[in-house]
Amino acid sequence: MSEVVILDGEIFERALKRFKKKCEKAGILSDLRRHRHYEKPSEKRKRKQSTAIRKTRRGPRFSRV
Image 1 (cartoon, rainbow, N blue to C red):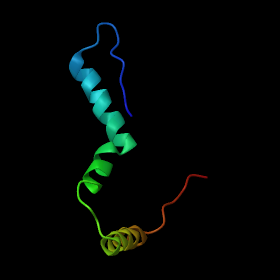
Image 2: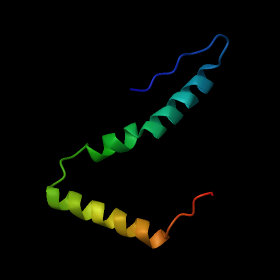
Image 3: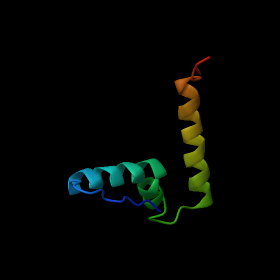
Image 4: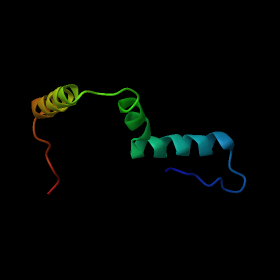
């Protein structure tokens, strides 16, 4: 669960922006969208396979040495 403490004299919009960023990093919205409807095991398998294919097409990522 993400929470943001509003600091003294902080603008509400800035705190809201920090909260949205925390939610995005935690993956709350994507998880919510994924669980909105029941997904059959075969559909889940196809989705995972397609994401794996997309990742391999992008190629290996180079790490800093």
